[in-house]
Length: 160
Image (cartoon, rainbow, N blue to C red; front, side, top):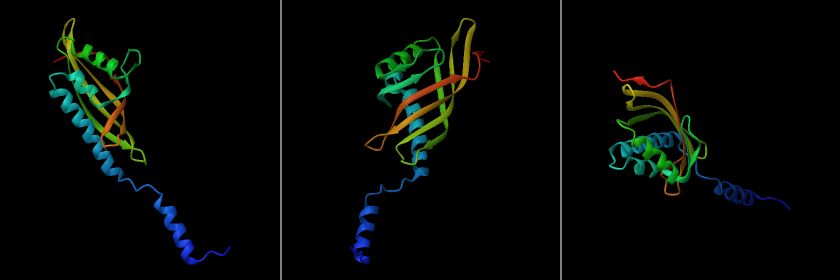
């Protein structure tokens, strides 16, 4: 069989027509940083922070907290966050400093820092640390958390 230029052109168009559109990775990184920031804003301004926290996690998400067993699922994650929130004087702030997105544009992660404050046996104390959050892009274009892990830089310190 002899290929003609027209047949080759049709084959080339068919092959390239099946390729996914290119992903704007810079735009996706920015969107992921914005999603992390919006998650914190929603959490920190909510009357029900535990509910706001799990509103951005997928149903089978993981939470990997220091010195705790692995927690999986929205209900279990909500219970853990509600327990933290019930600690006297508890507050937390976090901020993503890095976002990376895979070449397919549907998986990514954020890395950032946090500070937790609470009442300790000898008065107010704080813990500074870092976190890694894995995100998956949903069919509607939003980013949702699939796993969240955090750990302290050191022991709790008295607040000054």
